[in-house]
Amino acid sequence: MDKYKVLIGLEMHCEISETKTKVFSGAENSYKEQANSNIRPVDMAFPGTLPVVNKEAVRLSLMASMILNCTQPEYLYFERKNYYYPDLPKGFQITQETKPAPIGSYGSLTFECNGEEKTVRINNLHLEEDAASSDHFNEGSRIDYNRAGVPLLELVTEPDLRSADEAVAFLETMRSIYQYAGISEADSKKGQVRCDVNVSLMEKDKDETDPNNWGTKIEIKNVNSFGGVRDAINYEIERQLDLIEDGKYDEMPQQTRRWDEESGTTKFMRSKVDAIDYKYFVEPNIPKIKLSKEWLEEIRKQIPRLPNQRKKEYIDEYGISNYDATILVKEKNVSDFYEETIKLGADPKSASNWITTNLLGSLNKLDITMEEMTLTPAKLAELIELSSSNKISSKQAKEVFADILTSGKTPKEIVKEKGMEQMSDTEEIVRIANEVLDENPDVIEQYKKGRTNVVDYLTGQIMKKTRGTANPTIARSTMALEIEKR
Image (cartoon, rainbow, N blue to C red; front, side, top):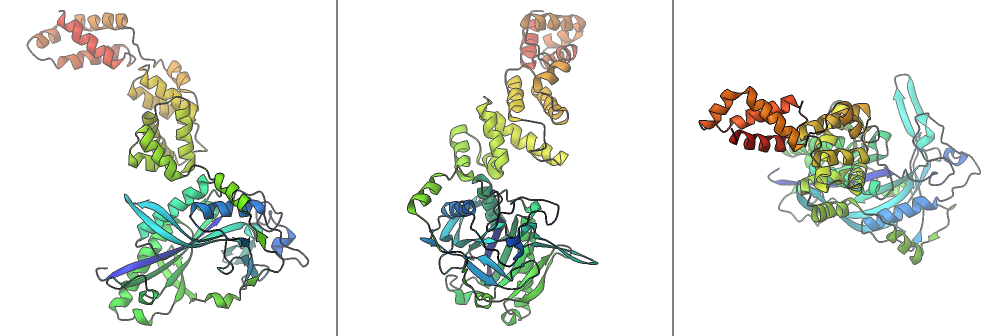
């Protein structure tokens, strides 16, 4: 890659999951494993059925457009994109093209990748209907129309990304934005996020602002995971570099390929078509929609605190490190859990440490989600209070934490059941310290000869007698004082 640079553009498709119904029909918009249970006649293109625009889908799309610093159109149009595919009953898709303007045009997004800020230009954001999904088996293929007509946001970037890491960091940032803004769950396991990746190479010393200097654009279609995006990009870069070395790169036609996870390769699907082949024209059954300035301003005011805003607050107000703050805001449910724990009185730094170190690690180990675990913000806040007030030791706190995840009990219940509550009664600790000294006269002699480190051993004996319930700080200071008296 010394002589070449990579140009990567993304087309990110994300289903809007936070509407009650689909974008042009009254069918329920929800993920269901039972096939063909969320459909209406309009989804199946029955004769005489007409589309009706879902206002909430438009509102959420406009919010996404504003977050991405795009311009919004004065009038909203929908168009027909004509092509045949088994999972497209009408033989066309209701979508938006660049003319007239889609729901968002010419924006930008700044995100972080490997500690550096990167900015990507957004070409456009448009609202369309999703197609049905196909399942392929040895004996044939089956079509599930539950997904047909689900509102789908397609985000198209300029080729501003320079590595697979940058591409994935951008996608992760967008997923967080969709989740925080209440636009979508953006759950790739439910098929709510898919991505087309465009990759080309060009010589480093040429002007990248001139499209004539770009190499042949290869589109990798429908990559279903961010890990797949990373692997597909890295493979495609190497494949194109090999073509350059073999002198065949200039002969390579523009094409669409697919990512094959089993072989870890991209495979040829078809030659790349141009927009003109889709024969776009304005959808005649949906009149143009006037977007009032008042409604647009109302939507802008509804934009919630986004990950970058929360991250800045955690760093500036709570003194959380950039690394930990990045982890806390990556997933909205984690950030919400953290903020709720703080509202209940927990120290922000302690809550951050417990969540980033213990909580997330335990979720991975137990292979459960935030929603499935029995730990709540109230239980974590209670555990932090028990530890910070020295009612239990840090070691005991970790034991209690693990117990909460398996039993679901509160920290106080576990501490009481196991007799863990730390002894802070100074008089009782003095009594036990002297009992230990009486039992270890030889250790006292060693101390008088200069071996002061025996205090640690004697403190350990206090902890043993109290079954770990004595406050270790008080136990040590008490032992140090009592041995001096001998």
